Image 1 (cartoon, rainbow over the protein chains, first blue to last red):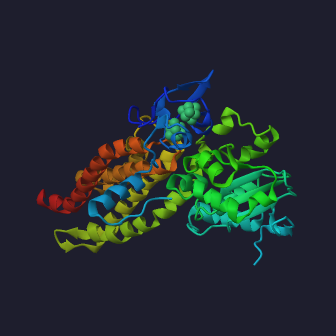
Image 2 (image 1 turned 30 degrees about the horizontal axis):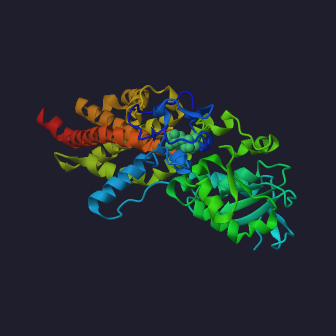
Image 3 (image 1 turned 90 degrees about the vertical axis):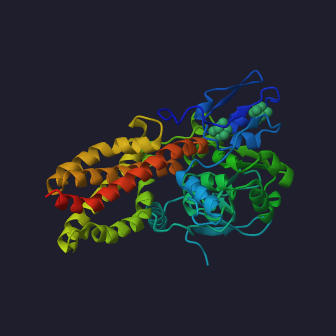
Amino acid sequence: MRGYRYIDGVVTLRVDRQRCVGCGACVQVCPHRLFSLDEGVLALRDADLCMECGACARNCPVEAITVSPGVGCAVAILAAWINRLTGRKVLSDCC
Amino acid sequence: MLCPFVEEFIPTPVGPIPRVATTVSHRDRWGTIGARIGLIRRNYKVAPGLYAVGTPGAGSPVLVTANYKLTFDSLRHRLGNIDAWLLVVDTRGINVWCAAGKGSFSSEEVIRGVEQARLAEVVSHRRLILPQLAATGVTARAVRRGCGFDVLFGPVRAEDLPAFLRHDHQADETMRTVTFTMAERAVLIPVELFLLAKPLLAVLCLGPLLSGIGPGLFSPAAALERGLILLAATVAGIGAGAVLTPLALPRLPGRQFWIKGILAVLPVALCLWLLFAHRLTPIEQAAMLLWTATVSSYLAMQFTGSTPFTSPSGVEYEMRRGLPVQLAAACLGLGLWLAAPFLANGGG
Ligand code: SF4
Ligand code: SF4
């Protein structure tokens, strides 16, 4: 993903290294390659590259990773806002 | 009825299983074009269940995928002379990435697929290979608990599967990283444009109506002249926001898409201005440019939904900033457009 960078300092990804058991699941699934294991110790590079897909947190066996997952889509977010505002399903989201 | 991509049925312990072609037929090609330009929006599906490619046996790998026909096609077309089982999971005809994000490509759905296909009777091993992007919706542990199969997340792109299988199920960093190349961006443009047909039709109808209003109540000549310019401004905004922005995405400065959309509109707006400025008052020129920029900015922001790197937190952040600006610019632009005939008259 070279050449792409989204907004800094907004991502909800948090990693609790104390809990990590070094299974490597997050290393495998992250499509932005944010994690690596160095002799069993988890390293996180540049959290701002995270797109909050939630794959890592979902597949971590010990809940060492938390992230509020979702689809980064303006249409979906707008639909959610409008639906919340009106209390009805006025707009449906994308894909 | 036999699907055109099924070559024959091969016998297995659970009965005959359809063997699918790995070659691209004309029908696939037309279907792909239809789906890509948005003609076939929903319902481009294959029936969920087990399929075979080549002549798989009890030890052959099981590749799990979504039941969106484009996804299924791009998988089987890349399997050349590989022997494998394809387990197609019911994702309601949605691709892997969207289905995993929305919860229809889930652990439960995979377990259901494994059980309904009686996969444990077909293969002797207990391993499923899923596309890596399915990890957003599928928990490997839950699948193992639910049906006894281990989940191995394979490469992000189907094209890397043959290499992945050859190298003893090892994926390198490139295979595990999402990309967003020029080709991957360009292929998204037609659907975006297709979805804009309706709003554009609205501009085509409403534009002349609004443009004709003037001091003399309604002027058909002005309706035609100014209505066409409004339409051109809208088309220019669409070009900047839904074509130029996706194509030039990594080159456009800034992080927020609504700003990228405004930057992309600059060259387009200049052309528009050169074309029409002599036919418009300064107020009308300002209105036209505001409108074009708004359309482009909004559509660029909408493109966040098609990219594989925008976080929902980030999109929300930029929408809180971009939407008010767009709303204000749209109101101001349309207001000026409507007011211009009266102002021109009043000023002599
Ligand atoms: S949420 Fe997705 S992108 Fe972010 S770190 Fe986890 S796997 Fe990577
Ligand atoms: S998935 Fe969880 S336990 Fe495994 S390496 Fe990552 S953080 Fe550590």
